[in-house]
Length: 63
Image (cartoon, rainbow, N blue to C red; front, side, top):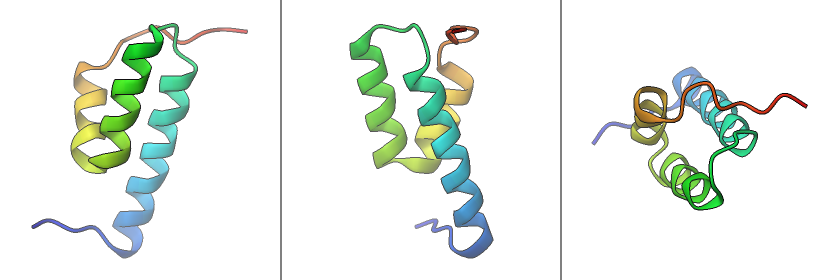
């Protein structure tokens, strides 16, 4: 099993927080936001990588 600790864990936490903020600020439907959020929270590394490659592109809300 792959486990991140120390600096690697801190970097992954920062990237996951960035992903969650981006997910919440997107214009994607609520159901999509919930699914991406659950994926990033419960599978931090895999969820983040999937979100980077498969997540919505250019949907950020400008307010």
